[in-house]
Length: 488
Image (cartoon, rainbow, N blue to C red; front, side, top):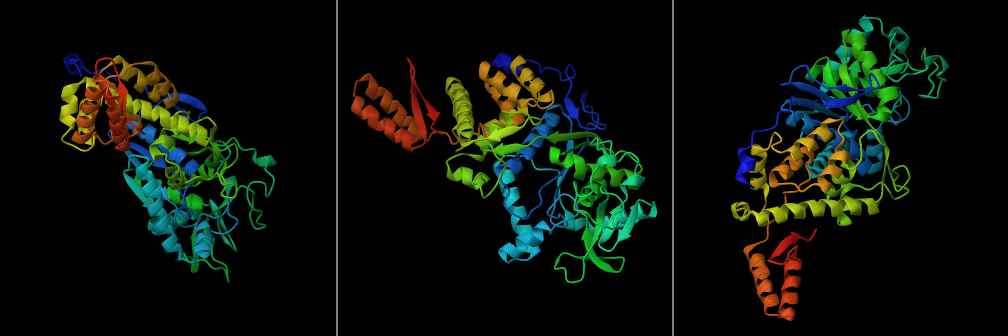
């Protein structure tokens, strides 16, 4: 990299804003944290009862970008994500079997074993997608005492009533209940939103605590009001976010399917119990379909990350595919489109490889390590603020309601420096520098092949090319010298 680049003063971030679409107001608004050193963010995490398919991970990829943009604005995120290991019934309402109970019966394991196994599987995939770890990952079962206190507070304030199967939140007592999702409560048909319970006063009422009925097989149970039971699904996010972050949150994230039920109920019970705003911003990502249809094991399109790896794709190829679109847009995943994303990511890695070889001193500095990781870290330390107009423009696109698609298009259209690529990696986490460098043996083979070509010994040149490719690299022949590139 040029000395001029390194000596150039960082471009100020004060000249442009971070803007986000706020579901609460249905508008794109400037985002300014309450406390830049403590940006409070809550993410609805998975229900850990089976392997997550790739569609489940799209939301976490989008919110990873959110955190990375916040960090590049020199704000400090304090992010909590829950793991639902209890209390989530088959529907998002209050009907059906508990998902963990169903998984336990299917696999002949305890619900605790199911929760532990699939929590570990989710976190492994999370790491392979190079997603930044939350400040805290909170398991719902660790907050039962706080759940009970929350229900007691709601009951004390007159927001609940008891039925034979649980304690329900009376949505008619919370006057703004319909506002967030723009619900038409007067025309909400009984049973259209949740399974009809004849003891419920209103179709929109929801359980904050469920009682275990006689003969019901439910392994996770805690005593409350002299009866065994467990918390309602919606309760855990209110309790965890309140306990770990307090109100109001800066940002609450989730999928658009959470708007009419889960997040509406979160807001109602939180603001009823605490008499304060739950979150200033609400961000929701749209659905992803697979091969033109809903993700379904029976259709064979509910790919896991492991299945993508078996088809010779990296999880980071999928991450790049997700970020090629906007979080508010509907997306359709196909293997052909994933292949295109893989090619794009390879192209970017090879542009970095070419820059390294044209900056000989930088390449020599990397050779002591089998990976570019150390070099990346040194670059990132110098590139936590845009140093060039290209870097600035990329960050501006990402700061404009997380418009990664526009940022990617801009990257493809402009020649980036190593400094620029370092910021791209810090912003999107695509593993562009996490690649093994050629060994000295491969470097020697490339030089020997150059000599063979100059001597018109094409048989030897072809043999060396095959050996180089077997090591994971290809050779690009330039007029002055040959350079190596990554094979995949």
